[in-house]
Amino acid sequence: MRIYSILFILLSLASCSNKRLDMLCQTWQVSDVQFINEKEAIMQTDTMKGNQIEVAKFQLRDILMKLIYEFKPDGSYLTGNPSASTEGNYELKKHAITFISKQGEEVKEKSFEIEKLTKDSLILLMQNDQTSLKVKLILTPVAP
Image 1 (cartoon, one colour):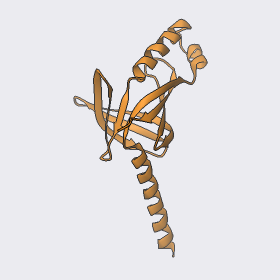
Image 2 (cartoon, one colour):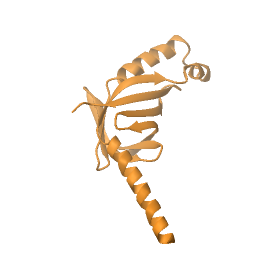
Image 3 (cartoon, rainbow, N blue to C red):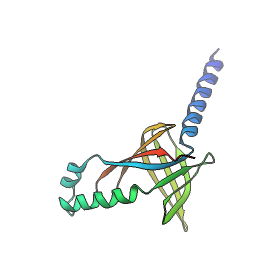
Image 4 (cartoon, rainbow, N blue to C red):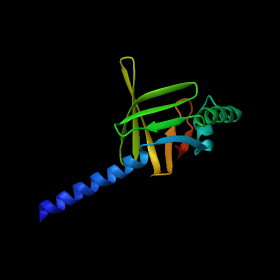
């Protein structure tokens, strides 16, 4: 009886992860960018105040709104915009996705928290590298 319980739990976990992978594996476009800690970011940084944060938000939003993410079932991804793209592999975890890219001999990993994943919505939380702004990316599927 105990073996059947363990087997059932393992199969449930596998099917759960397969459903999440099925929902993720498509092409997504950024449909909205939200900044979720603007006041904290202004107070935490010495180099960027007031209008500089607004300029950084405007520039970052402009860049992010052009991005497309394509996730494939084999664990590879392609992301980019009309002028440049990056590819690599990804790992889907329960509450995060980790992008793994190779630049020359260097392997870079970057993780984003997944706030929501359904077949028609993907919401990622990320920390901007250049400022202390936290960004919420709202993605929707690209129509086939």
